Image (cartoon, rainbow, N blue to C red; front, top):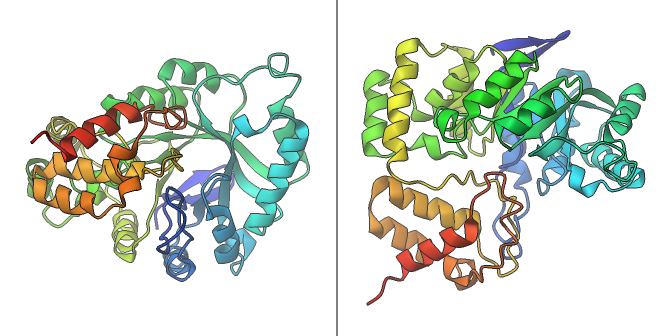
Length: 378
């Protein structure tokens, strides 16, 4: 397994993102079902055997921290690095911070976190004077002094202008951004990466496959990549692209099937950085893929639960698949398998999902578009 040096640590270039763990069927409409512990723990075992040692979770990933605690506790604590995140919006007082942090330690069955992030930042943090006297950095440093946090970072879902200010607001140890060969231009991930690199902030990559979308880009784009590397999977292009950037510490993949695990491990175990010719090809592929008009949903489910029960992420996934393959039959079959409350037509345009979306999508407008597409006028 390819490793990257971070301080005195050797971090696996492939990291395991625990947001998209395999789930058992059932659960309340609009809420994530329970983690399939047996299946997910087998994936963790396979990852560790292959040399993966970076595991990423978060306070708001349903069941993820608790799973991490159960699955990783059987391994020596110094054999892996655990990253988790705290949402600043939920921290109004020092008591809030202490309560959430204690809950995270208990869930993860650990005495400390190797990497601890402020979650889903979109702008520069407020000063203590602007924040009712609350100094989040002082709270983090207190935990570091107590030996409960080793390295402090943040995950970011905003614009480069905000990131530029945020990057110099604190002596960050690392940062996490969404980056893949499509979003280099689509969301200006290129500039975000460059800002962090200029400030010597190691980068953790999330969404290298855009929530799995880059594992199937449509016939034309797929053929372009297969022609260039017939022996390689489509997903491997996304992993290799992100892993090739010099300032990248690790590339997180939300693996929920053993085939994904095997493919990603093979890609990093025999790692070949993308060449200049391949970078040019990926730019062409991005243009072709972009013409399909796919919606930039990554399936993170931050928008859930919808008060009306709409399965927003699933609806987007079904519609995006149609936009890529241009076949209405698979769309109709998949869409009609949803419960009525889960369909786009159940959206009442309340807009509660909009502020939660890290991609800043106008979800109600897209729901109306999809509902109209699914039920065209007679």
